[in-house]
Figure 1 (cartoon, rainbow, N blue to C red):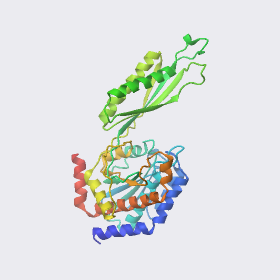
Figure 2: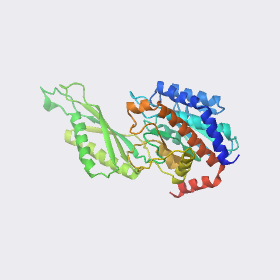
Figure 3: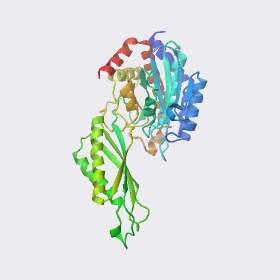
Figure 4: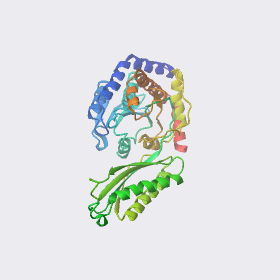
Length: 388
């Protein structure tokens, strides 16, 4: 069959089994599991892929819930990424149930239509995206070394082809003072909580002199044990984000200086803990994104034209995009419904959420068919990646 016929065939397969993929999305939603605890979710996805004829490996890169399901011997190596973790208390308020179900739908359609000689197809179960570590650990362990193209979809309030993601670094400051009775002997104490508060104040002042894309936000994680005891230990955690990693690193140095200055002012000692797993900004590949857009047009779907750098978060998909051509388009589940909210969680299993599963599955599978069958298409994408 020609490419158009293959794409028609893969969509037909996905639509004929749509209830299977919607059921997976709903089952994940009913049993949300946070990062690295996605045991039930991972098992559900792996069992499905095994039944579909994929070879499944478990427990990748030291993460029990990470998995790789593969089939095919020759052809381009295409990875479809399946996130599966939920948020504490909010459940699937980022719609990872849709991501995983769409990935399985696309893989099922491709397995039915393309032969083992046409494509080397991989479904990668990538845990702990909300913690920003799953894909980074898989990269470090070499699971992306033989991947030519990576793709996934993400639910959203709109239908985006491309979306910017900020680089992100994580910091923790632990301050050490000296306890004393806060009323009877205040002069004998050194207040670690004062250092935390001064750190926040210094960072608030710093924000006035940072670039527009820089984001600094944090919480107090330890603040003392009782009001009448001067806190001998207090701690806070911060995220530092920016559009490029150089700016992330520059801002991190300034934030650390804020904490060190606060410690000096309060008379405390400070321990600085930097997480070495830094999330990279997303590297947009226009040729790859256009390939996905073509599939949406074929499906009769309209793309929302909005600035790609609006309302940016961060994700470990950015690290993948730095080493292999990657797309991360968004599928809509309801206008004005934004991620990390109860409303978004509910929308992920609404009729529009179910439709998003099918849209993502069909569009990803159709794009993979073109990649498998069109060497010129692959060349355009890889050349842009090498030259950008």
